[in-house]
Length: 227
Image 1 (cartoon, helix red, strand yellow):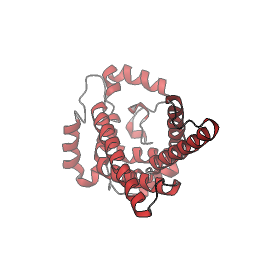
Image 2 (cartoon, helix red, strand yellow):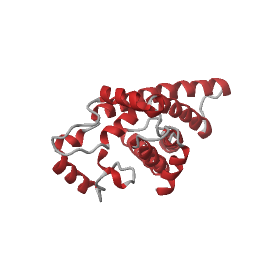
Image 3 (spheres, one colour):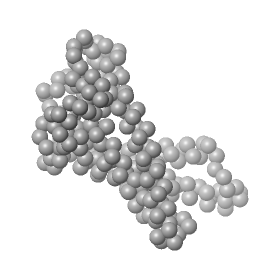
Image 4 (tube, one colour):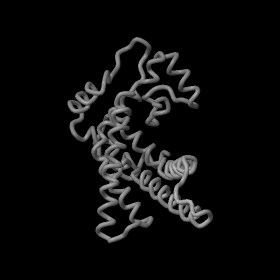
């Protein structure tokens, strides 16, 4: 979904009025395959990020349970575990998301050259032109957006405990069904997405730009104010 990525400057070309307008414009100007630009880093980033997140999250939960000698963690402990997992995952995967954002936000005319031809080409180009800081552009709002996963998992765990207790009290049934898990997952995801979206927008705008310092806090503040 790179169609709506735009850093807010006039230099980057056409602005898109809606998702449908973006799809039509990209297909017409750049061809159907342009709609799949950045798919490889997105797949690599998503699988890596979620694998790392759950790995670190489960370790953090176990450590909190052992440290506090608690069988069931409360909201604060669940959020702490989620924050730990989110920070670790964000630091390790930020370079992949920078590449994905760059590939997605580089429009070309049909048949023209691509600025970033592949995941490996983008990694090499960013390293040569911007150094290590280029891979960590947008890291500040990225770390702040860790609240997304923290809020999601905290809300999910609390809803799961509430439903389990309610059903155990009402019918002595201790196992939840697929529908209940699906509703809780969707509700917790929606809640977290709405709460953390401004940070995701700021991170994307910072990652699109290839000038200045990768840790430019002033640019981060500018993106938030612009939102």
